[in-house]
Image (cartoon, rainbow, N blue to C red; front, side, top):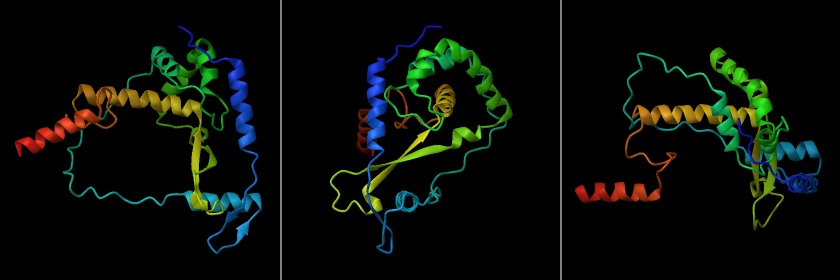
Length: 214
């Protein structure tokens, strides 16, 4: 296996130091009743509640039901080449999650770690299990630009830092699903979003053609 290109150590240290400096700031947060909290735990609770989205059920009544597949979709076993390629495609300069494994480390240790990831990822597939540790996240709160009142929780944006290994596993599964959907033509030809090789120009062309023929 070919080792991926790695990042310069000095740049990585700079990124880590910057992250520590940014996380040490002191600020006040206003609760819904107007009380300003200064206790760290209370501020965390207020920010979590103020930036959390309430899930709403999508209205799918206009979409006809799809026929149930007679044969369940079987995922092929994940190969060492798939994992190696996925690691090489990982972006750099991304903050690590609870496992504290940066993408750069996976790139450096590709040849060593891939033989261990192959049985791990395939065990997850075969047992239908997603490790609990991969479901945990570190939520970092950052300021939105040009807000008048930074004691308002809505002036902040939450960023969830997930497990690097969990994201790598999901990336490989997503690639397998995408390949299956394209090969079986499960996706409508007019669907553009999230498809490789498609762009906004394709959407404009499809819409223009539809209007023209109407």
